[in-house]
Amino acid sequence: MSASDPVPATDDAPIIDPPAPTTPEPAPAPVEDPAAPEATNRISRALKLAFGHADPLTAEHSKLQAEVTNLRASTKAAHARVAEVEQLLAAASQYVATQSSVLAAKLNLTGDITAETLAASIDQRIAAQVATEIAQAGVPAASLPAASAADPVELNISLAEFKKLKPAEQLAFSKSGGRITG
Image (cartoon, rainbow, N blue to C red; front, top):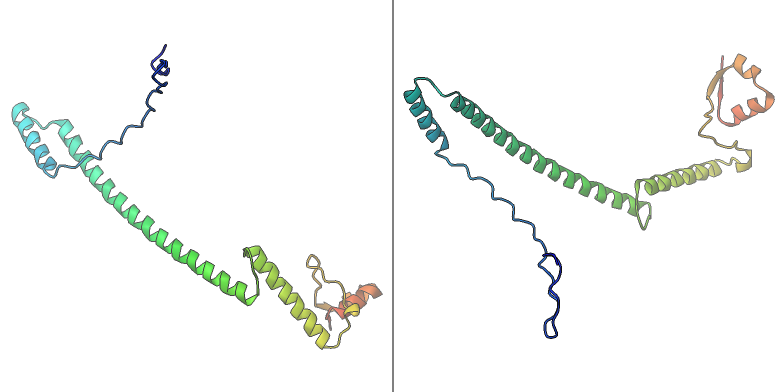
């Protein structure tokens, strides 16, 4: 029987499980002694008097102590910058949410509002407005060419280029609002 096995039950005692392992508490952060630099200087002077020269470890210790001080200052500055960026991010997120809800209200959108749904709604409104303006101008929809975003029509061509086109292409060019230049 090992230490992790439960204790066998007797007639009157229930089985007892071993205690669950616990994680140790983190060690407390070292507290910097404000008298440490002064003590270091005293030790350095004592070693110099005892051995006749400065201890190289003391110089290294002083250099490392200065580096630690600089790193702590850099860390404080970095934490301050992180806090500032988090505040800016929160403000930007709030602004985007507010503007999205205002735009969604103007577009009469409900439900999950994403950039894609906003773009699709705007595109639908533009297409509806264009169709309305064409209808108001008296142009029958059957006479309009099919629109294709992949193949945009050039609006200005020369007379020589126009004459090179097939009759169907000339008609499509004219119906799309193309102009013939000298």
